[in-house]
Structures are given as C-alpha cells and as structure tokens.
Image (cartoon, rainbow, N blue to C red; front, side, top):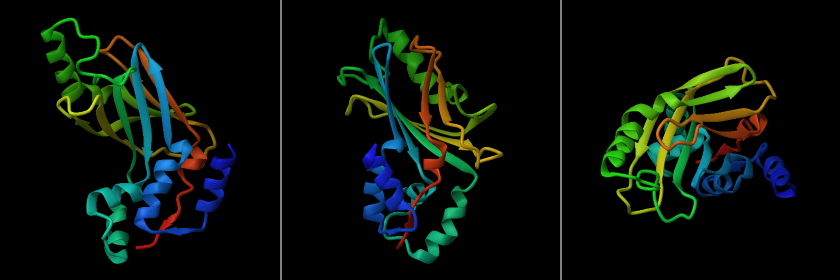
Length: 193
C-alpha cells in the first residue's frame, strides 16, 4: 500500500522519459490485476494512452509528433487481458481441451466473437468493446492476449471503480471481472521526449 501511494504521489507533476514511463506503468500496482478462475489465470492490464502512443510510434518519437499523435488515442480506454492455464503450462486455446473440434471452436471464438463479451463498467454505465485484437502466439508462450479498446465513460470524474468484465462463452467460466481504482487510471505522469 505504501508503494502504491508513493507511486501515485511521485507520478503527479513529474515528467518521465519513455524508458522510465514504461517502468512506471509496469510497476504500478493499480494497473495490473490477476485472477484465477476455473483453472485459468487471467492478467488484466490498464494501458494508458501515452503507453499506446509509445507502442505505436516508438520511444524515439519527437515531442512535437507525440503531441500530434496522442489525440488519436483520446476516444478509447485501453486494456489487455492475458489468458493461460493456472499452472502456466498451456495457453487458453489448448488448456483443458476435450477434442480437436473444441480447439477449432476456441480459435474461432477468440478471433471473431469474444469482442462482444468484454465490457467496461463504472457505476450504472456500461461501455462496449470498440477495438479488439487477439494475439495468438502459436504455443511459443503459455498464454494468449487480447488487446481491448473501450469508449470513454460519459462522466470520467466519478470515483466509482472501473470494472473490466468478460462474459466467457467458450471456457465454461461465466463472468470474470477485474476492479480498477478509477482515480488512479487518470493520474499519469507527463512524458518528456
């Protein structure tokens, strides 16, 4: 808890280089949530728009280009969800399989249908997933990743928790939820490029 408060206080008003910003995001406890459910390990991560700009255009982007490009990411809130076996030995596509046909159904689901099963909630407001990308690693790592973009809430100033919800339709898990402190999602240090 003390580390979390320190990260928050230190981030306000500070300017970070891209390298330091990556580390700050990676180590911020409120940006990373883990949950084990039904033999699967889920890791949900909040991806600030500044991080998305750096991922898209690289750490060598100029301040001028950064200022111009960051508005491209204003309309959405970004998250990623890593899904694998609880024992970290298998990805979501192959874990607890009963048949080759089931494997094909899982691929089809995560590639083309799962976008409709992700929502973001704050209070009574729900926003649907507008951007969805399934990253398949072909068994090179024991997980799969989905990158998600959600419309912004009408009232971002509310202090209610931001809840990322996944209504699973293929793994037999039902609802999987992750709670994020909404206020912390908006306290992002400035990038100094």
